[in-house]
Length: 99
Image (cartoon, rainbow, N blue to C red; front, side, top):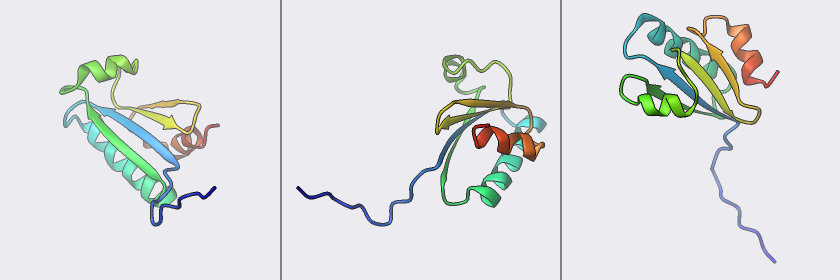
């Protein structure tokens, strides 16, 4: 029995989904803050999806999101939520580390 190894495929450590509302100031701040956090702490091990509630309201409903900006940490489990512009780096890191 042999096992295949796939070279040069980075392991995704975090799977994140950020819900925003267009170009609202808090949405733009949340994007910038989250990208800075991911670059500093999770540069090679995250996957980020940004979903605009104005274009995809049904996706937000499926995830139970009614306020923007809302960050969902989807993987690893448990799922965590952070609501707001993500300016409290400590709070965001606690959620992303599953605590």
